Length: 402
Image (cartoon, rainbow, N blue to C red; front, top):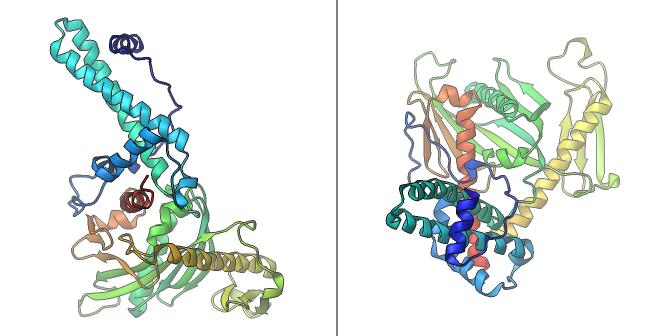
């Protein structure tokens, strides 16, 4: 096939274009596979692959080819223009080659040549798809915290014991999802209710792209079902809240020890003879901001202090990131949402066996499978990421008009 490609290039009077090493881009960046057995309302969602049909992107690439310009704004320093330009030129060469192959298939009288051209056409189309993926991947503005670890906090909301039971189910769902993605899940705080539910909990989640995969889970999750505690069979609506806090490194966020007030107290709750006998629980207050974190999960006061400080660092870093994002995004409405605690993001309707994400209008069915925390939850998460990447790309193009 390489020989055939060289022959084709010679007939056009062209040299074989320079080949860049292929960067691995997950296939879900371009397309979220949908199971036809699960009806959903996502047909109108934007896809990254659709971006190449948009005039702003084509205009951006044309001007990049013509002038190799120095891009203006913050995005100019971010883009690796020489590498991007090589990818664009290679894409144009492959697109021209595809047109030539189509002409050869239609006009050549030799059946053997036509068969070779058909095989080469498939290879050419696959390479074009990969090149488009790489170009889009380079144009999407990165999130500073994407490759950070995170701390997840879950809190029961409206609905009493039913809200606490749902919170426990959600916490277990994310624990399973962490295992599914080969992430480390460490419980930092766990406050159970009397009926086996969960008032509040926090966990540290570490691993490759942990924050990138879970950052859009933050917000209010609503459940609609007949609770186990309901004797008359009435359906209730309850809520719980998820907070996703990126975990910074010590280099990114430094805390002055003088700004901390550290208090110890005796642990409360279940725990046998150990509870109320030693001052193992730790409460840390960041005096300048008033942010508080505490931990009584471990028997060791030192270990509780380490976990409380870890949680405090995540809270302070999240405040810093939100301030920076608000400065950048105060003039536009983000479709994907702010990931804030007050925003209702998803409804879990058990009687209808339905999960609906309100930010992108996507509905999936088979709620038990979704709550198991594997493929179906991951499918929803990848769709959210793609919609957010599409929106970021459109914004970047509007800001970086060449």
